[in-house]
Length: 408
Image 1 (cartoon, rainbow, N blue to C red):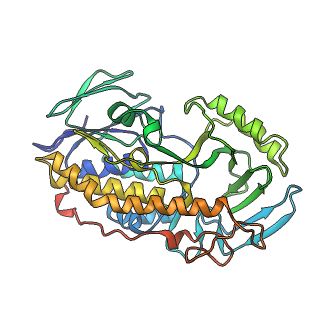
Image 2 (spheres, one colour):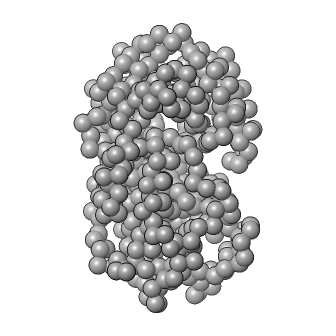
Image 3 (spheres, rainbow, N blue to C red):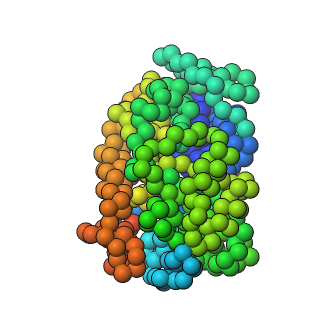
């Protein structure tokens, strides 16, 4: 484990996620002793296209990774929509489905690329426990005793839950997930890699069967590289599923999307053998508070925004930056640091979550545009009827914690 600066606390971060790697990077710079535990045996491969927007661009700049993120930009050149027979019904070379309009300063990047850039930015002295997870948490006024599924028990002054929508830390410290999970419209989506049999290059293709409430989207950056596929459906009632049972999730999708048009049968065939499959509901986490004593949540674990606003990555990076900075400001009294974090961030988080709910409601009961796409009325809609994610990005004034960085 990396040696903290004299008098600095030892912190366990659960989850090598976007928020987890961001806070690990900053805490190490501030002189904390940092250990990251991650259930997966390595950084998770695959994942969807994400967007770094607004204040998260400033966070990336202060981390020294902004130029690298721009180099890893997807550089998509547009998207098209097709019908069940594969006939193109709409085409745009002004924006993408996943990233928004091209004139935006925002960065669209694949999740695994973003996590790799973040990992490379973390101090090499940070300790990683890959292939392990937290089994129990027992805290008192001075720290948290942690047992792991594999590693020996340890004690930390603070535990940060950055372990996503189905957070183990949240369950152990706050209670069952059902208390905090808010599903938006009973919508479910999966993403996975597959062969680029459509021959796409920096392009996205979408198919949607509104009568059956199913759809798919395929994107690829190069003709000679794998594609990423998104498949999903909306159900009449909530569906229960085991978050860790991947094979059952694949069977559920295959059943729900059977009989759909376009190339969905072939996509589903590749889905069944995809090693980087990820499935979930479109949901938020809503909590009155993000901390219990010396256990605190960040990112999706405490305040998942959901897909509808395109702001989840930005909120996660901003939240991690603020939490790390406030902990560094209040090293002698971590409780005050946690309180400052919650006070500074709460309004920003709630407004982002409310925007996501509004956007999802617009998608759920739309009128169709000429392109067959949902019509989004109001100032946050682009001319083509699709949401303008850039216009949905909220400002956030970042404090400057530069003076707290350890020089060594």
